[in-house]
Image 1 (cartoon, rainbow, N blue to C red):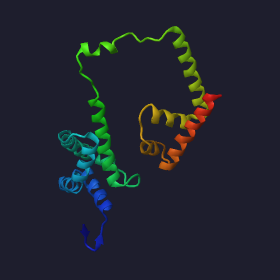
Image 2 (image 1 turned 60 degrees about the horizontal axis):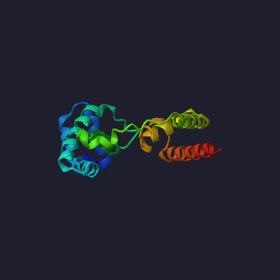
Image 3 (image 1 turned 120 degrees about the vertical axis):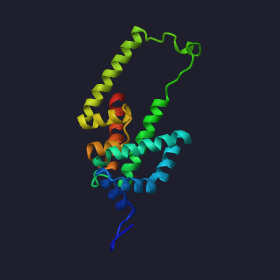
Image 4 (image 1 turned 180 degrees about the horizontal axis):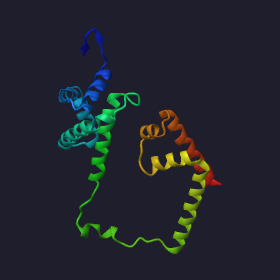
Length: 188
């Protein structure tokens, strides 16, 4: 795209379009769609593995982009990364809702057996939980929170990096070293 004598990169174009969309510019929205839809469709097809579902998801992603364009901050992430993150997160949401199993009750008989733990098993589990919590406290509040968010809540490294406002590789190091510390603490 050429604006007078200024030549813009693809990233600059996308960022400019998103800022115009935040002002509810429909032409900018159409242009963004034509520049990015094929790439996002490919991402959604790969994640969802169903072309029809990916087509539906693509439309929903663009609705989200329209609704959230005013939240895009150019200094935090590249424009395409922001657009890809919206698509990826939407696909993950769809995959999570897809996991509901509607098998007839007779097919579930093996799963309905009472697998309750014995009092002895409950006591052992309680002791292990206390040991894990003790070791988590040794990590410090920020690192323990990051470990919980990554391994119990499913946050990605990038999401945690953004959340704590630290570089991505630093977040990876935090998590790797925290897991090593937990393992050593639990082995004591």
